[in-house]
Image 1 (cartoon, helix red, strand yellow):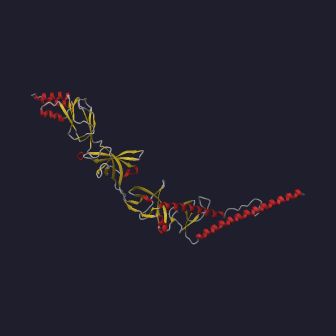
Image 2: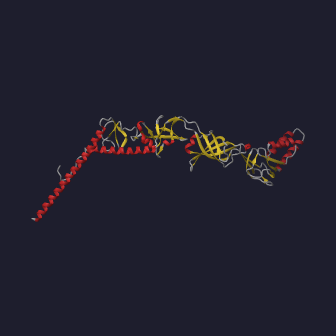
Length: 440
């Protein structure tokens, strides 16, 4: 009897607990349904009387639909977008009170049509003009009897004596020529031509041969002179030395023109072309401006600095003291090629994220819209806009980072609210579930 009583109590307790749980679940479901119903009602009331522009899926905001329905992307209903809340383009514009704009220091600038200033600044170093070089070699075997230039890097003038050589082979050739010239007869002309040719083969120039012929005297010693004005960059002989045919003796670099090897940033290389005029200045000569042009653009990019070499040719006359010297550091102003008219905005208005470039477009009524743009060249604080804007529009030039952050935050909240409304719209179609053993 006692055992039956305990069993009856246990069964009764289980039934009461199951009934209580079922009632709890039913109340919870009805509360959720009422909550979703209230949410839908509030959204519908909020949208009552407003013009619906289109429907969209908050998870895929770029796709628009002309009628309500179920989203083809997610298991949720489409959300309406009303006329007074519609944001052109990306749907993430923000509205800022004029007083708050003033406190934030928001400043706008107009999108204008113009040409970028083509002046490009760069740095470079001075070097010798390698096209203005003369190398003097011994034309025959001989001896250096006198040397007029004593040290490398001495300045020399055109026609200045450099060295005096005694060349035995030239003496023999001259004696033969003078002996034939003193002869008489009809065959003298042919013999004279042959004697001249022998002097040429010995290494004598036509000028030296003419000197021997006009003077009628033997010139055992030959004076070598500088063929141009410049700097003695190499001096390979000394007095008393014996030289053989082909021995390099002097190397002279002209300094009437000088080279400047300039480093041009890779992104500005297209603005510098051969023939562009430039102005050069150096700290060692304050107030002095050297003018020249771009001789050539070297076809090589420095992998470390990402720059190209521009070879500049400058006038550097010797009579003014050859002021530009190899190794000097110079600053250069290039007059780049003329550019076409384009849309320009202040460079500070462009937000570069690493993957895209964005500007904040100022609209009527204190609204601001982030717009993705394609940028071009940049010079003197102005950036070229290739795509994304129109002339006359206004962009935010100061405080744009705050506006962009606010717009991004608003877009995120809008997507969350859209997702909640879609869930509430689809919840009414879900079947109600109750625990097993509990009757509805």
